[in-house]
Length: 132
Image (cartoon, rainbow, N blue to C red; front, side, top):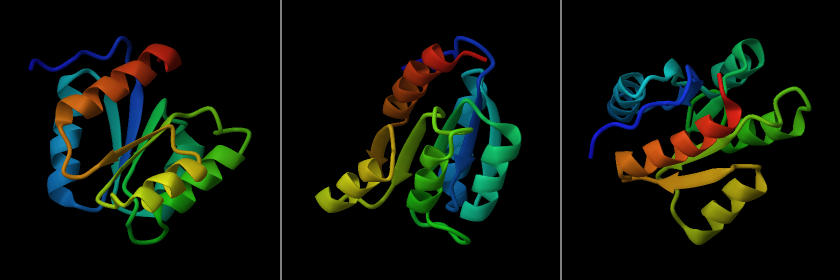
């Protein structure tokens, strides 16, 4: 499947501590026209979200510094960032984990291993809503 182009220059923050996954997703996003910020640390992710205010956030659950679920909850309870779509991209695939992801405010939840095309569809959906 060909890469889907972002409708506008949407900035995506990718917080993922697995370098292989982070590199794959980052390359795919850049190829699709997104501007990409990356980090491998939950606390740094939260700081980048507050400083840069990306259009979309992709969070791994298990990261150093702070869990992705905690970052998500803090983003969604802050009026300044609550409207930023958050996609949890994680190996935590038990039903209760997925429920907790949504309870923490995730807009989408994608489990590893994942199809990059599915992530691209989610991103395109949110990019169409958030604009540049």
